[in-house]
Structure formats: structure tokens, C-alpha cells
Length: 205
Image (cartoon, rainbow, N blue to C red; front, side):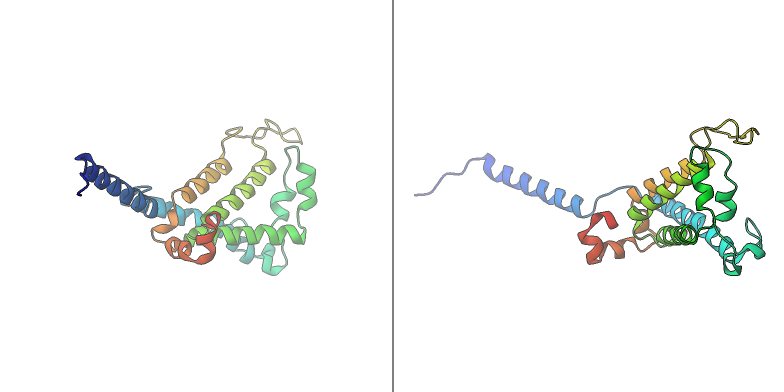
């Protein structure tokens, strides 16, 4: 005896199959931004990578901009002495003075610049790089302490914005670039995401 089929059965099955297939495709290939926007974001990623790599190069080799040759890291200078030692504002002023010139602080600071810079330049591991960059920028913001109207020596701080200075803007950019998967365009982001370590641990992407 033949079992009658409802008129809506096949149609519901087809619509459900198409919906499931579309959801599966969107899950595997989520459209975050347009192609033109992806290229702009990729360019911003490269620029941010250079923002971190340049001070590394200048402090290491003393290129004569912020760091003279005589104070280069390779010539025995300290990458943190000039910056942290000159801080004259904020609640952690004495702490930063104590850190200035310490070997561990020099190496940690330079390795952070290297890792964050290379990650954004190559477009890999943007999420952990953005986290590390945000922490580094937060520490630098505290060291500069833009909220202060006067320095500890009584001189005006000349702060242009008590909260949103370039450290804040850079941190927001790092997080945004990681969220937009900026390494997928003009970078190694897709190859990195396909590696087992990154595929199994999404936070490493």
C-alpha cells in the first residue's frame, strides 16, 4: 500500500536543506568585510607592524632618530633607560624608574616589539599579538600619564588629551585588525589558520 506524501513535505525538506547548506557555507567562509575594505585593512595592518618594528630597529642599531648610535643596544645602551627613566608623572613613576635599564625590562620590551611587529607585518597570530600590544600600550600610557595637568616637578604636562591619546588609538586599531582577520589579505593569515595549532586553538589566530 502506497503511503501518501503531503504536498508540503518535499518543499520543506528542500528549503531546509538549502538553509543548512547556506549556514554551513557561511560558517566555513564567513564574509567579514568587502574585498576593497580588506585591502585597506591589510595596508593598515602592515603600517601597524612597522609602528612596532621601527623603534626596535632604532633602539637596537642607533639609527640617529630617537636613539643616537652611542646609545644603541648593540653598543651597550639600554632600550628602556631613556624612556622609563625620564617619566615624571603618574602613580607608578617610581616603579618605572626602578625598571629603567634593567636587563629583564630591556629584553621583554624589545621582544614584545619584535613579536608584535612581525605578527602584524606577516598577518599571523594577530589575536595574541593584539593582546600583547594592548598590554604594552597600556603600560606606556600609564608611564606617560596623560591625565596629569602638571608633572611631578611642577611643570605643565602639555597633555593634549587626558584619556584618548595615541596609545589608546593604537590599541583600538590592534584589536580591530585582529577582529577583522586582517592577515587573510596580503598576509599569511589563511596559512597560519590552517595549521593544526591555530586550527585547534582559535585564540592563536
